[in-house]
Image (cartoon, rainbow, N blue to C red; front, side):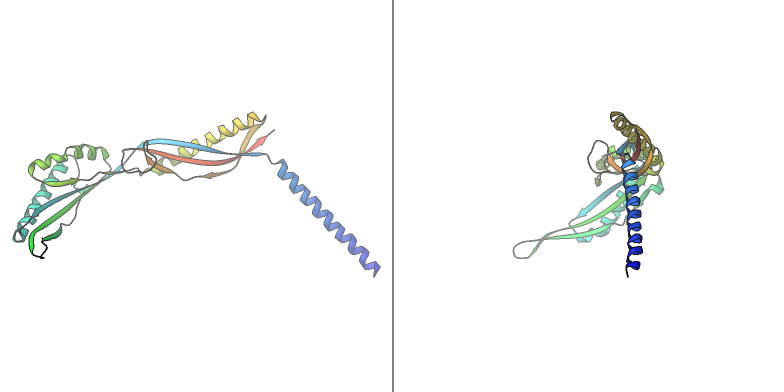
Length: 236
């Protein structure tokens, strides 16, 4: 029995010793791994390259019998608005004509008797274009159509930046370079030198109206921003 126990103890001791040396080696390798993790920022101010704009126009009458006439007036107003847009440089394929919507309101007294009513036709015209400056110019003078008796609503355009993929590579490169600058400053202050990059993580890109803290549709100018997180080796 003793002959069996003794070799077992030797084997167990060897396994334990091997485990100690392996664990100690891993520990020392982690201690010897000097790295610094920093963030790098890149920003660009860009121009919107897509605009969406909506115009609504309305015709009304209190007489139900005049609804056919209302439709004719609505069609005339639509024609005038579209003509104005084209004269301002908006192309036909950039203009979308919506259906004309009809609403009916009734006004009754305390005895539930009909005392008045209002019949309304509302049409919508939508414009989508890459020539955002054209929208800015045409919209500024659109209210001139009111002189012709057109009741319209000049909705604020939505300006979007859609060419993010075109500037992504340079912005990521710049953010990584800025991270290296920060890492080099840290290393210098600690008497070391920054080495090659060990790992990097890209943050999400954000697009915000210039000078704002949120929103990305109101202004022609946009601020594009990205933050990367990089880990560099530090050499003593």
